[in-house]
Length: 105
Image 1 (cartoon, rainbow, N blue to C red):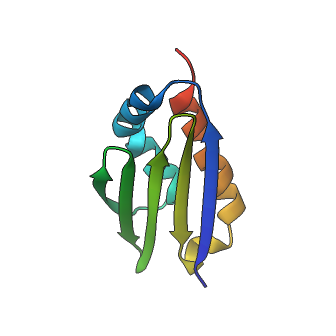
Image 2 (image 1 turned 90 degrees about the vertical axis):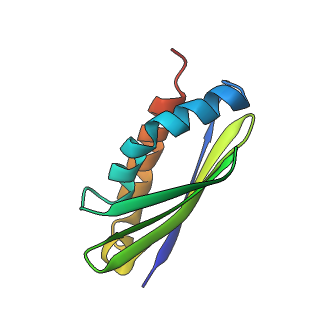
Image 3 (image 1 turned 135 degrees about the vertical axis):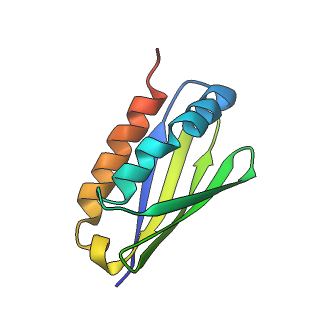
């Protein structure tokens, strides 16, 4: 059974910098969302601050969105049955990778 997962991360980068970092680093998040399995991702920036994505692989589909706000980023994904059993692990890895993208440099 599919399972939704939401990760919210605070930041102090401002909207433009957070947006730029997620545009450049979304590939790393893909790897975490798919649990290391081979999924083909397609992305669509619906607005400057909202990315929707679909990933397909192993007969499964992951759907989700990344919303970028001035002080936080929210990643929501619906994991298919094959990944739903490890949803907490995936959420933790996505949060870790997202925080790395949002770190002050």
